[in-house]
Length: 288
Ligand code: SF4
Image (cartoon, rainbow, N blue to C red; front, top):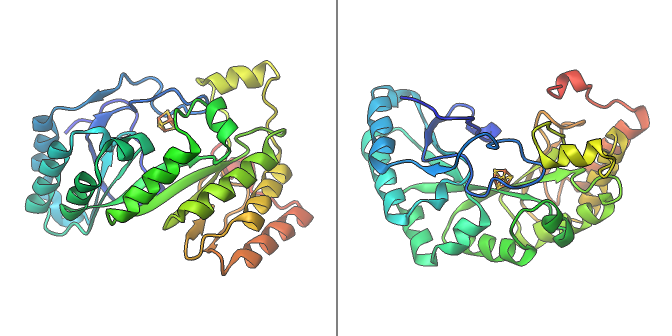
């Protein structure tokens, strides 16, 4: 079995068997994103995907989860995805969960019936990168999706029975956009109420258009205290009962875990304590 280009997976898929359904991301133009920039996007042939599944099935006892990569496996035709899911069911009897990244465009392109069919055939969790709920910032980062399209996609995914896990990014709007990013994102999360929410911290990567803006002084990167202030504004404004909240990504200055809304005050208190002591996670532990 061979992997092509850069392969990524969410932290909770660390022990999953990763099967590439696509190589790269079909959009690949978000200004901050470095992930698949070097990869020429393509949908892999169904026969090759199935070949990987057959090849790895001799180790099927070791895998409880399968993650369909890369950037948006849901871009595949529904009938092809169903065939992949059926093959998984046949060859991997111990697998308890199959998941994939999905863009809101992928979800909105499919009918509710198609999404339900995918769910019934074993696709259980969709990871969706919101990044922000600030409508102006969505345009600025070239996300190619609107606030309203996110709301529609989340509504459809939930109606089809999927678990949803979304990511948002503190600092994405720079120093000037901190408050708007926090409040717009809190509004989107409150309206869509995902099952899981991962809060990441902005990092600037050299091979991105955002890096050029940063170098030219057009993007002011918030410091650690400003990032935590932004996260605090988000938490003060979000209303998403039952959402599991995590800021356990390598990029974060403070690791937080709790459930909204019941742990909101504790999470805010942890931020306040860290701000007071200035005890931010050092860069060496943040992957720098
Ligand atoms: S953030 Fe997601 S949609 Fe945007 S380029 Fe990166 S992988 Fe593709």
